[in-house]
Length: 137
Image (cartoon, rainbow, N blue to C red; front, side):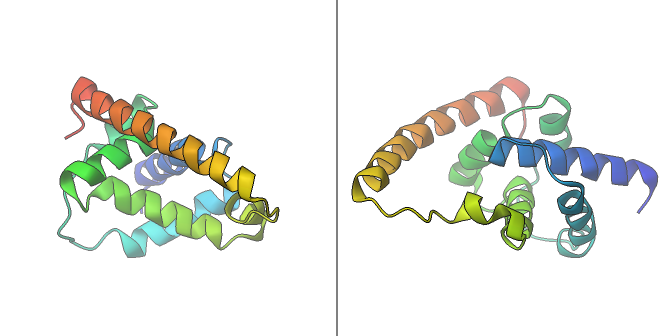
């Protein structure tokens, strides 16, 4: 992997992590992403190609774009990259509180569910707008 590709993958990992989790990626996660990217995403795959560089360069909301693309195209490169990053984060003990809720309350669960439904609608609309506005596909 040459220097330019390493820099590009670092920028990807950081941008995607910030979009998904709302805080910067730890260097260990970025290094894991670069290593895993080499093995997992370098094979020729039958997925829709997406202009990932444009998403990173313009610091667009990768989560919203991915959601809209998944609904439009099905399997695509951005979805694979975000799935890879989430999988790598899930394997890190530092992310336990991000993925597991230790509190048990039905009211909170229903409130969160309602919020996520509204958020999903917004993300889908935003993603479709960003795809059209920036010609991602």
